[in-house]
Image 1: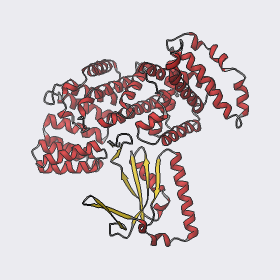
Image 2 (image 1 turned 90 degrees about the vertical axis):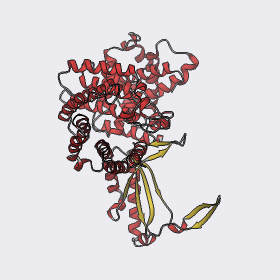
Image 3 (image 1 turned 180 degrees about the vertical axis):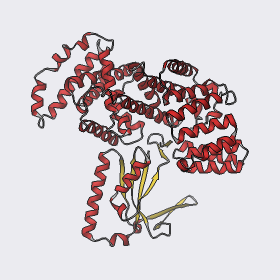
Image 4 (image 1 turned 180 degrees about the horizontal axis):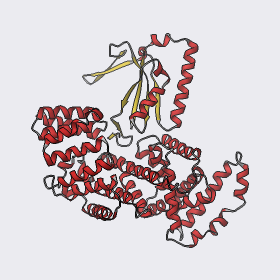
Length: 127
Length: 419
């Protein structure tokens, strides 16, 4: 079963962390990533750039229009996500609890409902 | 692996036998297994050009032994001491002197023992279920890592990692190439059966679009269950497991529409069920139940599937028989999902109100399980409460984690709600 772990945050939050502490946290994330890549349960780990770097694309009258910034009025933005493939929801929750940031901020755990096939583009039921 | 299905079948049948011989002689699941995989690949690439060798087993064993020597030689910087002993005996001499080769094509008792030991080893309790599944498909099923990765829709590197990790864990657990202790045997056999069932089930839930691309895991589960049944013909649960797979797989063509939508048992076109699979499965479970000393969960589930498969329609189904089988199943293998299945049978025999009452006590355990709400929706609809049925289906759709099921439940909700 595939799950997505999502961490939210904002620049203010990152700035509030002591630089020495921050380096330690990054190292802890590296350990986490290695541990679960090695176990064959982590499919990918991604972090996004600051919200200021985000662009919005819309199509109106067949013409794409690009503007700045995220659409939602929110104080916290998507910061990182992890794609897992594990035996059970329990295991996904266990790994989420092991994520270094979870001791400071909650981590969301989303079951993946479907995935498009690489070969055909056809939706695949994910079990 | 090979364009010729006959060759592929042969290679995959021989794979665990050759691996068994290597394991007995040289030990070390990880390198022996890699050596067999390389030999299989050699056979698949060379045989189409050279033709099949006179004795394919001898060919595979010789090549696998040579490959093992290569693998161990490349590790020799680290492990020179072991190497010296091993290289003292040329592979060709080892292979040629083997009585295993002398007896030609028929697999003997030793091969059967070896394959069974391999199954126990791959389904070692130190491994997680997904690792057990992956290792079993590779070492016993003879599938390549790429094929297994594709079947489970994960990157090949992830699957390779899972398999190599599983081998390390088996080594760390101190497992040897020997049958489990008598005291553990039943427990270990249950794990093997569970792993084969997981493989089958993974394929069974796949929708039509996937079947074109993915290795057919249902067929693979059946192949391995046939193997287990052949190795242990007197084990009633292994027979029950195979019967359950055959009787479930018989409905495959009818359970999804060409565009991948799920069709529930009640609405399936039973003319499209595979009558020869039903005949095989029914005969097997009848034979097994007649002689079994104790009824297990696979036998009972197979018996339930047989009652469904024998009925010409939902109305013709012997629900009293199904309810009686569920009563037994709840006793030997209690659990909320089994009780939920029983609640449906209760409703079909005693009416929807009785069925709904039977689901009430399951709410604590299954409140977030889509199947609980789907069953409630169905029973509410039977009792004529369309509005409540629609909201139960709605809830079921929200908890579903499989696309085909979610779409089906969304449709049910709209239909029951009258729009």
